Image (cartoon, rainbow, N blue to C red; front, side, top):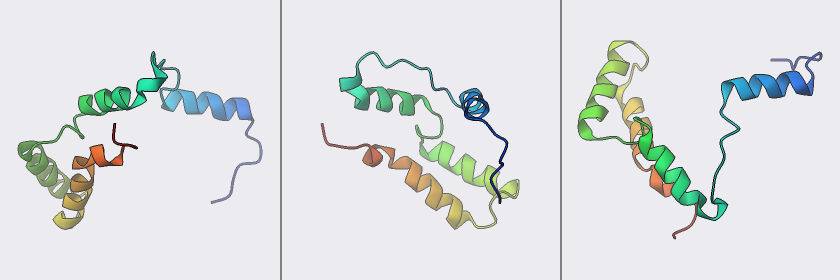
Length: 90
């Protein structure tokens, strides 16, 4: 893949901002861990239980996204341990 030569910084930044929420304000930067935990807990893929786990594995294999259920289970196990990805032990 070759980088495009005629892309300006302004074009790149506006496209990035359209795809990603970048203007969200964090009231208390000293409490960023709590902010991240709350945001992650709202995400259906990180707030996983056995029922959701089994449904996701079944859906992914039925629709042909994953040929091997072991690969799907490894991804979901990684997602279940999201709290270990956050820095520090506060």
